Image (cartoon, rainbow, N blue to C red; front, side, top):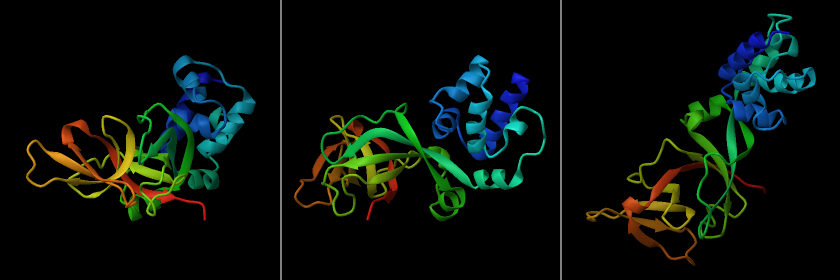
Length: 218
């Protein structure tokens, strides 16, 4: 089989499905560098691992290796209707937490592209899923909830719930600008009234993104 053709067709399917190399590798259960090793290091994959990858890419192994030009339209259409969002091994809490790490992806979530784009008005490329810990945002957010963060929305002038780094911890809080403050300050607010709100200099707050969606076990 031609490695050059395999690489080209894998990249075509990544582009078509909205997956990146790491997400496709993780979802296929092949280790986070599997696709990168093929595309960037010219590592020839085994047929069995290509089988796992083809399922995620919405095509057949025969298509990837050039034995057919038929994509398997039903599978491809289904894959194309879904987009992948990385889940990160970061605990966003109302108290002490860990700094958000862009390289900390440990899994993936599949979302309907139409739902994200048409209903939530979001760009899939700017999203991440993380887990909440702590009770300071209860009852709105509970410990163990997964939240969807939009990295493209970082403007605290629009009140809302944000994931932020406040120079001490990574937290999920409601943010409000303090009117006429100079230098500019933000108020970090907990929904749980047993936790105090506090003011910080805006220049010390790194807004990671707005919390736009959550999942919870019922």
